[in-house]
Every structure is written in structure tokens, then in C-alpha cells.
Image (cartoon, helix red, strand yellow):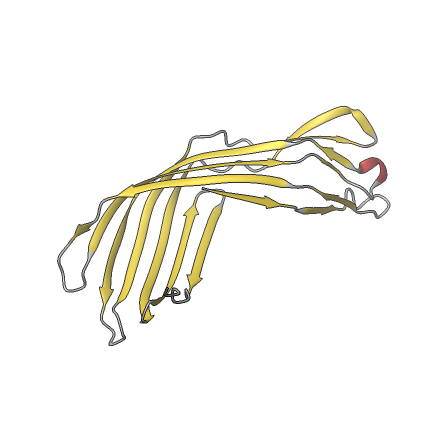
Length: 195
């Protein structure tokens, strides 16, 4: 489970055919997210220490963006209402892994993850707004809706490089018809302090 707060800046040129002006805005967003995953490892028993781990994952997210009003574009400034976006996604898949002896301190462990993801929450992304020059005429526009189903692809590698120190690389992406959501990490943790 986690929490994040962001303060994105917005800049737009409302209409290039009109007098040049730039609408500027700033908002804040509170984001809560969490994930549960379970699986069971089946060892294949080869010299590569191969294994297969079927898994199921459930991910939840909610983000609320504060309302904001642009400045700098006079009657074309937007006043955007507060909006909340939610996601509830499952992933069913499997991790395939093994290790290779390259003559290093430890074997190099490799993993490949494949899965199918499905979004259960509403995928519409409405934005309600009004123009400063016409505050009595609110309107709603819709952003690109994510696809409900996607393919999870992932790769990982890790090995020990010293006592109590490992290095690893991980990449995971969910690919769908309209969007890709990549995430990667590379890390060399410090050895733990001994008491």
C-alpha cells in the first residue's frame, strides 16, 4: 500500500488563430494505491534450477485531482472541477525462471513474467470544466479510455556481488491497444548495518 501527492503544472495555448496567450494552471493530486499477489513455485529440477510460478495479482488505485483555474488566457481560462480516477485490476500469469553459472560470485538468476490483466473499474476519463468567459455553460470532455484487457510482460535479473549485497534489474510493462504502462527498477542496496 502506498500514498503519493503530486503538483502538476498545466500550460496550454488555447487557440493559435487568436491573439497569442498561454493559459497556466497548477493543481494537486492525492493518490492511494495497493497490491496483493499470491503464487506457488514449482521447481522443474534442471541444472539451471528452472521453475514456474503461477500467480494472481489484484491492484487498486484511487487518485483525486484538486479543482483549479487557469490564468493568463483571459476569457479562455479554464476552471476545471475536482475529479477522481479509480482502477481495480487483476493479473493472472506465470513467472518462468532459472539461473546460470557465469563464474561470478553467485549464479545469475533470470525471470520472465507473462500475464493477462483485466480492468474492472470504469475506464471513462471525464473532465468537467467551464471557460472564464462563459461560466454558466459548463461542459465535459473525455480523455482516452484505457483498454480493459492487456498483456503483462516482465523481465528480471539479479546476483550477489558481495557479502550481504546484491544487484538487480527489473522491467515490467502492461501493453494494451491504446496504452503501455512501463515500470523498471535497478538497485544496488547497501549492506545492512550490524548491531
